[in-house]
Length: 103
Image (cartoon, rainbow, N blue to C red; front, side):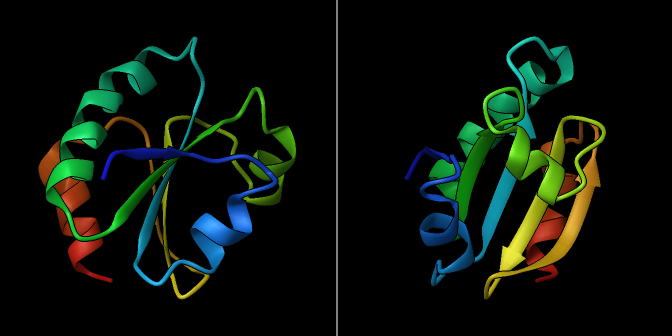
C-alpha cells in the first residue's frame, strides 16, 4: 500500500475514519532516528494489513500539539478513530509488528 502522507485536511478521513487500523508516524526530516525508521515502515506498509501514515511535525504543528508529541519519532496506533497504542523512539520492526498485533 505504501505510506500515506497526512496533513490537517486528510487526517480525519485517512486516520480517524479508516476502516483498518492505522499506524501514524510523527516525524521530521532533520531527525536521524526518524530517517532510520522510515525503511522499516516502508517494509511494513507493503507487508501488513493495516495502514501506515506519516505526519511531518514541522509542517503539521497543530496535529503534533493535539496528540501531545514531544519526542520523535512517535508512533501512534489508531483503531476505530481512537488512539490505542503509543511508542516513542526508534524501534525494531518486530516491536512495531507486536504493537500492531495487540490491537
